[in-house]
Length: 170
Image (tube, rainbow, N blue to C red):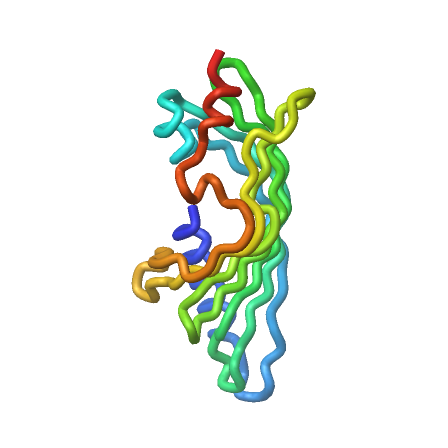
């Protein structure tokens, strides 16, 4: 998923950069809807040993920054999503509100905020990734190459899905 968002951002930034002029170029800003259904969410499904699906919706906002020649230098994304994660007839609520800052000069991305929050009504939070992450990006593939910095709890980054698997097991 992280690779896909980077590629979308890079294509968007390149397209917007084609219409830029040589004068001081103001950032391009826009919004996009998020409406997603995934039948087998990974790595959660593989780790738990059964298919887990999700339905999510929300909105994203982007801002593309340019140098004085009109070339894209970075992108800021802000995403707010709500939805449901489900398996075995059990439903978990999803909440996300995060920022991603792509720097095309340094080939890095910084993620901050509530990356995701899984909660069961009446039970509480079963898994939550939040804080700050900084990754190196491969400029050719758009993949996150190395984790440079981590602050805050990010259990899923380290494969800790135990509480989520337990709550979705009948």
